[in-house]
Image 1 (tube, rainbow, N blue to C red):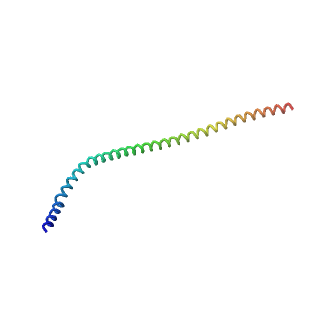
Image 2: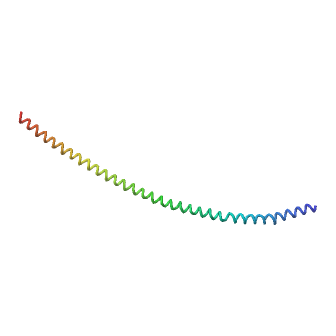
Length: 117
């Protein structure tokens, strides 16, 4: 019976005194080792988030610049198409004038041939 009482007392002492003390010592050592690592990880995450934010801002700026360039390119293409149409019209007019001159020359030659006959 005395052995049972002693075992019971030692078990309570171990559970109530020794285990909490060991847990406190282990927790303080782990916390002391983990806290700097945690702070370093949080600082690294902050740096990554800051870089991502900067990249997002730059992406938005580049996206807006590309849109502006596309709009300007579309305007230039429209102007170029208008100029090409004008050039085609001028070329057609030039060909028309040339054909009229050739017709005039042919009419003149026909008239000369008619007079010879």
